[in-house]
Length: 422
Image 1 (spheres, rainbow, N blue to C red):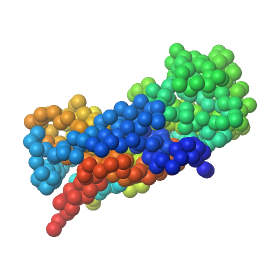
Image 2 (cartoon, helix red, strand yellow; image 1 turned 90 degrees about the vertical axis):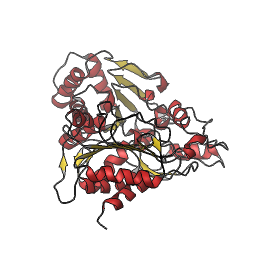
Image 3 (cartoon, rainbow, N blue to C red; image 1 turned 30 degrees about the vertical axis):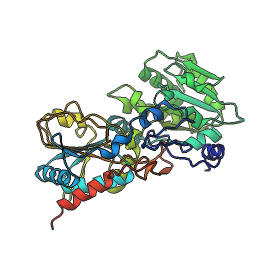
Image 4 (cartoon, rainbow, N blue to C red; image 1 turned 90 degrees about the horizontal axis):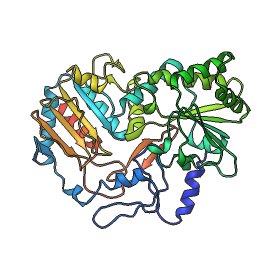
């Protein structure tokens, strides 16, 4: 389906070359960058706090950032050799963070298979909730384009999208159609700026709300919640309803159950009407890495991979924090190419660590062997590909500048070569 948002904003940009933002899974592709001679970047025509904050992390110092071994500057070859040595001694490493693009994920998967590593993402909890709900119940998905072109009613459940995704409403804005927005279990998101926006049950427990609502739409049972009855009548009268939720804002540790309940409601609605869901998740390459690992292994993230051994997927046991707390790993590979994400708080100070991260990463002093290699950010210092939030589009990324930094994929490939028998 043509993406009118892209077409409209490309026309508005005129002859200026547009750029795709990699810092949020909306992957807005109408950005006009204003690079400076010293490799700083800005997007003055785009009002997005998340983009501005992300671009502010890049500067002229990035090109001169060197790899380090135990806090001391070194050359790339020595850093790679030390990283390879750490992996050669590890028997059960964890590849965590995994904030990278599709090619980075593919290269890391091959390296992980040579090392018998476990794979988990920085946003592994949100991914695991969504994965479990999909595995157990299935899902009715929709896309940004479909919401924009078809939806006449939008139901936002227990979240305010603009807090993490500032341009969300712009991405689903429809011209010439009257669209109502109902916020269930939360206050109205003021960024929606919709004349027909309203909030119901803003202080209610989300599980209670879903239980009552599910009982009504699935079995026609009477419930003492007139707001839900009215909303259900509106949904039945609508041509197309889009349900929007954020897995990371749902109550833990049982967010997967909330997602399953929401999907059951949408499934029941689809017996007589049309509805779909958009899960606002996939930040820092999470959706892209999850998709890539699933193609390659048949399992989503939180899987242990090793040549010659059966694949082992466990979304509870292979959670980063659980593995660290139980001391079930003997080395960490931490990948954080979009932002300088800190190492996990539960990481033992004497655990060997290989850090492939944003050039502004501040690596704290540690007792264990520590290798830091600054890497290119996809869409900043290298090209790449990312999956959009609705997983219906794989967007190509173009480098905005060149600071001479290696990609995650190239480092992982070199470490794989070092692991192979000569």
